Image (cartoon, rainbow, N blue to C red; front, side, top):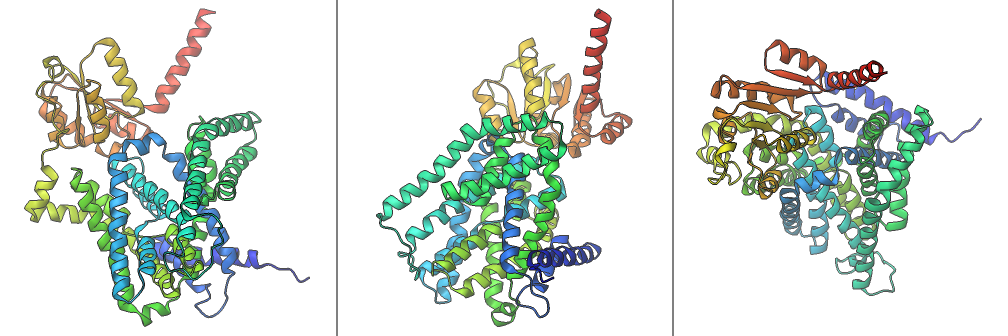
Length: 563
């Protein structure tokens, strides 16, 4: 029987070679995604032997981008974005502008037109949220302050890139495009209508989607079928992404991101993330394989200096710009290096933008090849760039007076105001972290009239707390200087309500040194970590599931005792 098995052969070859080369890459201490990219090159049209269907691979990778962006949305709420808006919004805009200028300048030097250079520069300016998320997950810092700033920064970049994508067709003629874009309406009217569509989609998702998706999950969960629940999650992610593209002219990625973000409001958000994880990981592999398939290695031989210039803009130019912006906002050197490493790559939106530029006749084929070369090399090197952040920080702090000055300079929110009441500085509770747990503890302390000072890494949160008249200092409490500013030496209790267990011991050691008689209270979600903390005598440890079991047991026993 003669069957068309193009889809099967593409998936089989992609997964099979990705497994082989991913395994080899891990064995030689390289990230597995390098192996996935190599697998894509081998089954791509630029290399001899078996050639997979690039069209099918591209569509499969789109599903991967949808599911991965859906996962980003599940972990990133509007509140998270608002919490880092003061650094993420201006930072992303300024960094994209600088990167675009660098790319356009190099293109102009090569003899390209202004329109070609502009689209080329924009393609180099937007980093991949997919690649970033993988890097942050590998290091366990997705929920850290640095991780939230990096993800928020890239979400703003994605939103800006979507705006560029919807504006490119009506502006193609002005940019020198050769393809004809049919539109009887005036340019301003086309642009206005496009922006109205995007705004309407966002409003629809935030208003209607916020109610419909949790309602849908609730009713599916009541059936007790795990298969139906998984199907509901995946169907919601892909259907909303597709519907957003068809009805509102919004990209698949942005549609899926908003689907995840509004689904986060449901009590089933954690379960939705777990159920969709296997599919997200599987299609992420196909995403990297499809990127490799688009790459033509000949470009490395024909134009090595052009490739080198592109890689330098992505890894060096963008990183330095990002570092300067973060430091200008008075964030520590560690945050600046994390954001810089996060932006030292390009990915899915770059391909989409460059592809649209080619279809409109704005970007030459050479530009697409250079974008792909830059993406492949920067994605492969990104884990190395991340791993270099810590050594670079140590080296800069050791040998550079300027770095030490920037890291230790006065932050207006790093010190309590001189007008702080005396009762908050003696016998007070020092509360580290103002997240979901910290907020509830602070509310209870306020109701009981117990004085407390909050130590929080997010400067925007600290600013908001001070406006409400709550004593708060900005910084990582693992640094003794932050605890000193919270007057730990006079405090009666240290409550560590942050989920970042890696700094628990540093905080407790610093607090015990500054105030030997202080009582320490710690939270943790990890049973093994709670056992180790208790064994080390860190303080009173509250383990989430254990406390939940105690509360439920008490309720059950009280019920039966009363009856």
